[in-house]
Every structure is written in structure tokens, then in C-alpha cells.
Length: 336
Image (cartoon, rainbow, N blue to C red; front, top):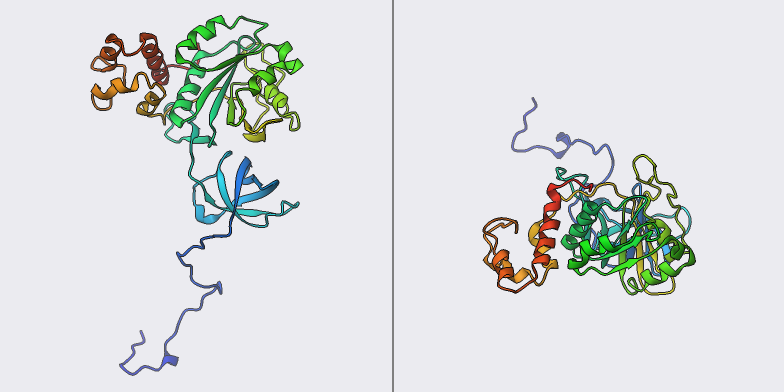
């Protein structure tokens, strides 16, 4: 080993060359103060279609965002080529704070939650009254996800010409959820879309439902300029439809201010991420009664203070039953 004395010549000291020929990496990142604001319309294999002013721009996520992913409905900051021309690509450098999130897990044992939609005001749960048969447990799970994520629910019941809506309306009546009942004839005539549109004006509404219930058919009627292929087929053995919508897509509501977000058909809706303490916020008549509950109360145990609150006449017992039914849906299967 070569040793150097006190008086070394700089020429004698060897240094390793930078083989890549680039400058050392820095932790300082640009602020991108000139970034434009965009709305994520859809995500497809790492490419995000965004609305910037009045044009659509294709973008990718910047490396500095790490694992943080943008989803449909996100407000993002974009830099680069914002012309929207073919074969151009911009970069998303920031994701704005979310006012609400619709999340789900693959099942109740899956620790990894997936954000389906961001910043929606309302969740339209679409279910058929027959063909396929309604699945109340799946509807309950969608409602829990809506309450947990800060979205107001809307119940859309289709195919009322095949079965009456009375049973479903009775099941969810105590939750005070707005609803629209439609038939196949009304859907074809456009009357169904007109009634549903009244509930959507001025709002961002995500549509969710399992395949075959007419969700995408309804979206096509609401946004005729951007028609999506519908399933049109329900398996005679399983009673389930085949998925045709493969990615969430945000569309401007025809003839009114508002947005419609069509999501892929779901067959399960895991709730591993749900905190029961957030669901109670959707029950303002019951929430004050939880002040006497023990810590981490599930609101369905002997020491729960809600029983005394209801017994004293502060709220309807049917409302407490509805709350507990929704909270218990994590321990149940999603079938009937």
C-alpha cells in the first residue's frame, strides 16, 4: 500500500473517475412553481389522462413522487408538454390534498387498501332488483366505504319492471338515503337518465355496482358523447355479469355542471381499512350518544352507550339497528 507523507503532491493522489459522467445526485428537488393544475380523468398502465384547461393531456408520474399514486378525481400539478398533441407526454409532480376517498381492499384480510376514486362528493350504488338478484351485503359494504371516505350515498335501483322495489326501500329506508327507481323501458326512453341527473347536478358522482345491473348503460345515457361498452349479458348459472368496464373514467355530465365517474364492476368490496369510529359520523343523531362509550367501542357490545341513548328517546332504535348492521358487514360474507 502506498503511503503519503505530510508534503504530498496533488498529482500523486489518484481519484476514481465518474464512469457515468454525470453530476452527483442531490436531495434538492425543483418546486415546479409554474406547474399547471389538472384533473385526472383515467389511469391506464402508468399513463394518466388529465384535463388541463379545456384539453386532455397524457402524463406520467414523476419519480420524486415515489410510490404515491394518482387516481381518477385527483387534482394534480403538471409540467412539461401540455399541448395535448399526439405522442406528447407531461409529468405529474404533485398530487393535491384529497377531500374524500373511495377505498377498498381485495378482501377483509388484505392489509393493502386501494384508492378507487378521489374527491368525489357522492357514491351512486347501482343495483338491479332482478337479473341479477340484488346483493344487500355488497350494498351495505359500499355504503360503509362511502361513509368512511366522506362521500354521500345515492341508491339507484334498476329493472323495476322485473321486481318491485318495496323490499329494498324498506331495508334502507331508515338510513335516509336518497334513491331513484328505474325500469328498462325508462332507461331506453331517457326518462331514467333525466331523473338520475337531478341528483348529480353540481356534484362529482362515482358509480359503483356489480356487473349486469345496468350501471354503464345508465352512464352512457347520462353522457351520450362518451359511450362505453356495456355488458349486456348475465350468466344464467352464476347470475353475474361479465366485466366490460376495466378502468375508472371521469366524464363531464351532459347538459349540466357535474362529473360522472364510471368504475369497473365489482364482485367483492373488502373493508379491512375501515375504522368504525369514522362511520358513526354519518349518523349525526347517534354520534352524540357515543361520548359515554368505552375506548375503541365497536358500538355493538354490552357496554356501548348508544343503547341508553336510544332508550332515553334521543334517536330511533331502527337507526341504531341500521348502524350496527352496516358495521357488522365486515364479519359477513357479501352474498345474501
